[in-house]
Image 1: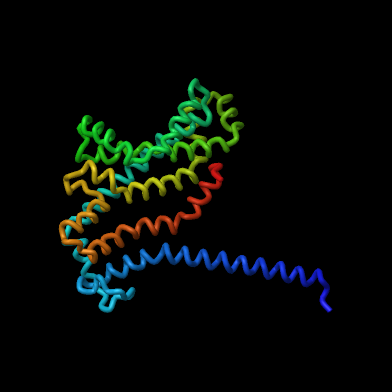
Image 2: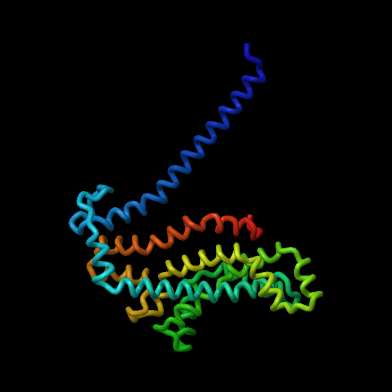
Length: 283
């Protein structure tokens, strides 16, 4: 005969197994809901125009004509270059200034430090559509419409980056800075020779996040660029609909090309992104 304790232990293990199965089923459903639109996008990208609205996921007659047309029939490579240039410039400049701001707010003591931090943090509550009209007026007044400066400079400031770096710098032991100050090092030298090398994990993760955010930006580039030579990829894709009478096969081919770098970056660096959020003090 089996003891009551053994039976209760078996029942508890069965409950745990059932809960795990339920959570795995929920995760599988959510993963399928996330992946299915991407699969449908790739499917349409390989379909000929006559087969675009067919319900089959696997194309009956796969073709590369959509990709060839996107890369040769329209200046899509120019759009790709614009997005790459703007995203890289914003990322590099933002990381430099955000790291300095985060270090100052975390380590230096000066009047109004907490008020400045709270003011920066409060901008989380303000989305781009709310300020896009006054921002457009300012950019127009500065003469930066239809220019790379208009695409880059307003996108540099990001309260999330400053907040994340400040939280990370608060976790760095002060003993290293105190020893450097005793040796006569200035705050700039401490920042450049000690803080920045220790910040490589968080800076790498932020670089990926900033790059992807600007690579996928649409509203601001659409607002300030009327010259097609300055269009970024998302604006270029949107114009397929008006120029080519909703050519969904071309739009999906272009979207597939644009999605490849973002998916590759996330797959390669997902561990760095997760670890940076863990070490930054966010729960």
